[in-house]
Image 1 (cartoon, rainbow, N blue to C red):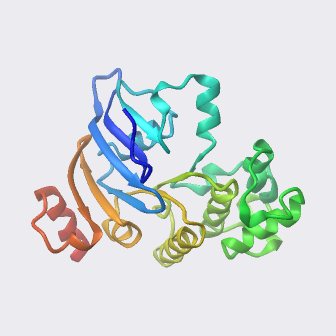
Image 2 (tube, rainbow, N blue to C red):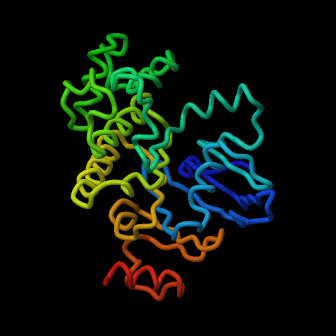
Length: 261
C-alpha cells in the first residue's frame, strides 16, 4: 500500500506493548502533511514519547506501518533503515542531555554534517565544506552569537543550548523534525522565544514538524492539525481553528479547561 505524496509521514495502526504488559501505544494512526506541523498533546505517561521513538525507529514496535515520504520504514533492513533515518532529526526536552558535555559547541553542532558528507543543504551553499563558516551560519539561523562556538554546554543557558540543538537538527536539511517537548525544561519567557524561532524556521525552510507536548497552548500555537493522546490511544483530532469551536472529547475538554484557567 502506498501513500499520497502530500502525506509526508503516515503511521497506520501502530502498537507498542512493553514486556511488563503495559500497552504504551494502542493502534495509533496519523498523517503529517508535507511542510506542515502535526501537534500531539497529552499528559505525561500518555504514550507520546514512546510513539515518537517508534516513528524515529529508535524503538521496536509490535505491529503497524510507518511511511516517510512514501518509503516503508517498517520494511527496511538495517543499512537501508540507517540511510533513511538520516532524513529525520529530533529535538528533545532536555538540551543538556542532548549535547556532549566534553565537546565544544562547534563540534556538537557540526556532528550531523560531519557524519553525512552527502548532505548539501541549500542554506549552506558555498560554505558547506568551510566548517567554521557553516557553523556560524547555523548559529545565525537560530539567532545565537558566534562566540558560543568555542564554549562548552555548561557555559550556555538552557535556552541557548536548545537553540544549538535546533540548529543541529536543521543542519542537514531533514525531511522531518520530531520536536519532543522542546520547551518543557525552559523558563516561560524563554519558551515563547523558542516556539517563535521554530515557527519562523518552519516557514523559511518549509520544514515538516511532528510537535509533541503536554502543553496545549504550545501545540495550538505551532500546529496546523492536532491530536490528543490518552492512555496510549488517540482520543481526539482536529484542525487548529476548530479546537474551540466544536464539541471535543471529554479528555480534550479537561485539557482546554486547564489551558483557559
